[in-house]
Length: 433
Image (cartoon, rainbow, N blue to C red; front, side):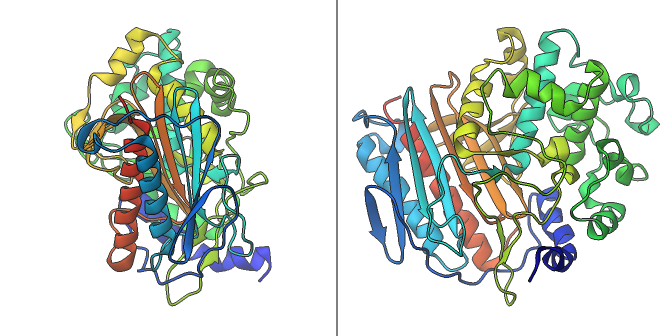
């Protein structure tokens, strides 16, 4: 099937997949099996038909972790992570690949299992590109907060002040409420107008200013500031507020305020379907249909500041370390960000263990300790990135299949297995803390 024909075939499935993002749950059908992956690389340990490989950039620590794994050595925790990854890709309906980065101080390891492309036998690496989905919300949050630090924006700025062309009912919504998902804005991804538009043009998105128009006729979900509800509209509005305050396109401000300061030269915000080589192929698996490569199935502009960024595991790891530790803005702004934390406020999809929500940042309280970051999923990818408060300990996990908490049957089992991988990565990152 050629590229244009494949995109036409995907057009009907894309809205369903995107709605699973909007709901932090999924309508994607149960998954069947995929071909057993082949592997290559250094120091491999095999489980069944899958192989987990750990590639180290430095010496391995022998300190002990916090929490329930206090008796386990770092080597044992690394082996647990590799095993969890191997089991994830080997299980029926599992992703073709999983890749994670764990860093303690200057010691960084890349862990991977499966294949970056089912037509080959190459492990995913830390330098392969991928769509980071809703982790992009942390980038738009970082951009906005850096402008707050420079007095270009205020957390109390309202939609009515900066974006007067948006519906009058949204006028009193503040930047603070948008960043904390307490705005009440209806999610544009869940509207009939959006579904029709994206189906008609999966590979060409409208200008960012048009994305929220699909929700203009919808009532607020609740009075601003009274509830928590994860909404993709929030971060589109954040991006538009950044543009209005800075007087420049969001992509330029993102580059200047976040990507350049953190040295993220492999991270970008494409408008179209392009993804730089090399990349981890993203897949859709909805039996009885065969597994489908959806790497270039949806233009990034449809998610923009809410989920359109392309990055690599290594860049994402560098971002989350700098973001959580406050490298991008002052201690005063960081304190504003890290003191809210709404109990039970889940990211999309939920991260492991107990979730709490703050300003473009989530806290995950796990048996091995507490970390901060963001999750995401989009067509073909599911993402997780966290760090300790000082940024010295970090973990990222990515799979090339969209899975979330609303899945059922085998797909739900895959999501549970992904949480086990994420928890294992956290335990390794927090070893000795």
